[in-house]
Image (tube, rainbow, N blue to C red; front, side, top):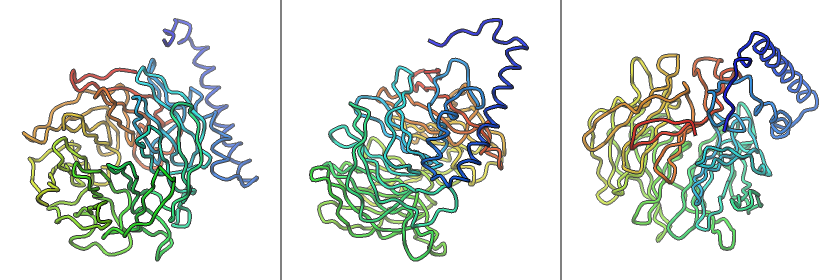
Length: 426
């Protein structure tokens, strides 16, 4: 249990020491960065060199009594709900090789780092409880297709250790991945080597955990990056949303269609076009796919059985005022186990918010989801086995260069209970 602050903890002398310590950490970080540049350290090496600073209290946004992630994360990391109810978080912008596990009791624990620093890899839970982490990017800024990794590794929850896996046929980052009913894992699209230095690709391949091998599949009909993949109840896999920079925007492209993969035939086909652009999607309990547009005020359901789209009432899920589509990435949305949606925090104009909103697609109703203890944007929500929602990481301000400042980092986590509509620090 965290120690209750005493009267001395808030004394002028204590506050002065905290300020001095924060200044010392800031100066030290500049020194470490300078040394890293002079020694030409790789991103992963630099990450390991300063990792201890990222988990040292005093220079980031924190809430007294709240659990703390052990490594700052506001994007580029992979999150996986483990079979035992814990949550694995690995990789991230930098890139980083760090990995940690959240226990629903409210404890974050660092585990062995991956062998390779990765930004925006995929992480897929295998049928036996292990986690396959594949691809990702090795660069920090101005990434190119050749910076995408083909390597893969497997996390063992029982030991907290990693073992190498066979490499993919094609390096990729920001790709979609899903486990099929037979236990194999399909990865598709992403950023990889193509016709330009920064190419969005349509290639796909499948990992077979038995022999541990990758096999190339027929490419998707559309090039996509940052798309969402789900395995449908009928065994097919659907990839929806995402975007492509390889061609001009045209009707019927990846923004308004999905691609369906049939494992029994090995072939892909496109869905009928959606009336609205697809910015976010989630598989619903009835097997349909719910999507939101890039403004957050239109919802559609796609039926894989009929290939038809059904419109829902306007949601205004994240449009509080003059919020534009550029803010959508900062407002995470997650599908609850009962089919409702939960949107948390995010940017309104420039300041972020701690407010949460809930949307029920059947009546098309929007309701309050309470307020988090911490204002945050670009954070990560995860639905736990209990049905509650873990929220962690992010930044306090999503405007301009402030989002990159250490004093803007949010390193705490909290949990939402959909039954009571309340938040708790665990």
